Length: 252
Image 1 (cartoon, helix red, strand yellow):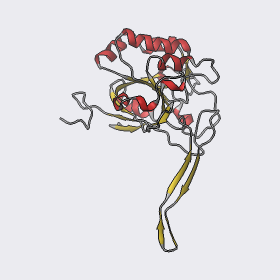
Image 2: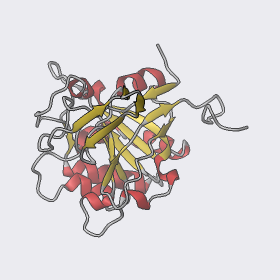
Image 3: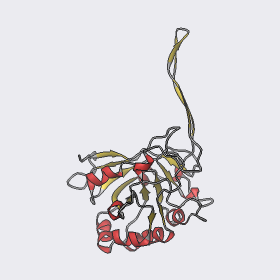
Image 4: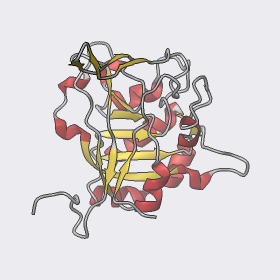
């Protein structure tokens, strides 16, 4: 069933999936109650990292002295987006695409598609690897998550620049754009050095594929406004455009 509004956010919980070296979040809920005849308000104590759950990396995550998440205007997080469904290129027996190579991106980002992205004024790309199914199982120690080869990240950035596609965001259904332990984090650096923010740990991209296929949609993912932070959690969602290419909630 096609949807016009799709939540792409993975919730934060103590038993949820996370980057392998991150500690589990600690979430303590104090429920509202009546105590000594008086209402005592509920509250929740959180001990979390900025990379738990669905989140956006700012340049400060990898580049010393670079911009932090609170230094961006809200418009950076509201984009006309397109999904690149890499699961169409899975080999027999594969559950998800692990290594995103330059060869693979050259197949899915042919000049005709890049031209269309430029014409459609695309400013965010989401890549579906199929790994969201693993994330949603609650796996907490998996180091086999999808990632970009260094050459692939550079190819994507340069291809968009050559076709005048002003990317604000790249996102995928994985914990990181880099292989764990990769020296210098080349994929992070390729994107963040061009001020392309990175949206990680997305889910429900299969619904985006069903609902929008290769058509553009609105991606909205404003972060929590942590002052001076390298990253922050988001509530990310995809929203349909109307027949004139406008967001469904846009004033007319």
